[in-house]
Length: 232
Image (cartoon, rainbow, N blue to C red; front, side):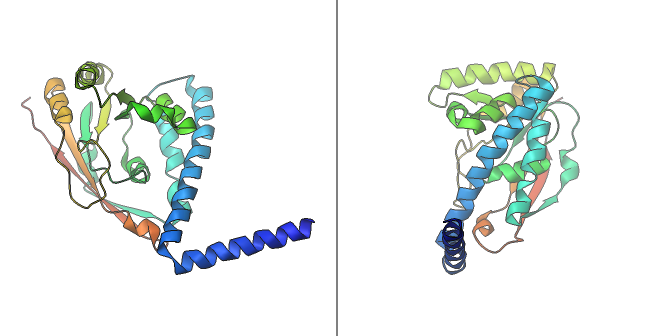
């Protein structure tokens, strides 16, 4: 019986390998499925570590999350090239705005995520099982995208908190994922926040992750720049 299961398992693995070699669609589907499974499992483990080390919801947990997610690239043979990282070394609070292509962006984001930095995300993310738990523990700021007044109130509080607690806030100004290669019209919230808090804008741009579905050892680039849109 055990030998039979072993033979069946071997046959399935060989079939999957052949399909991955022959079909880019199957290749991508299996990779993205493994990525999602990896996120769920690692989030559960990281959540336990965050609770043990820091005791609850705090931006300090982002250091643990960052360390865990940075290991993902080794599973997929990704290599990140960062240009202009010196522009990212800003003391004190700041607003970070970047493009947003897919759920895979998290791997690139964690490569350059500074200390004391949290993201702004839609409130629905909190219901994503262990992933929702870990981003809650990491201090992610949740907003209701369907309620403009509610979102404005949250962002107004964020402006006060980021200055008082010396926190950087990462925002996706397109408002949603976009993998077309072009930028969608920007929402104004991040820029209003920068003006209200009188902080610098940091603008990283992430290259395409299309190579994720192709051969291993693909390279993804980041270009980081800095902008001061408000008078000091």
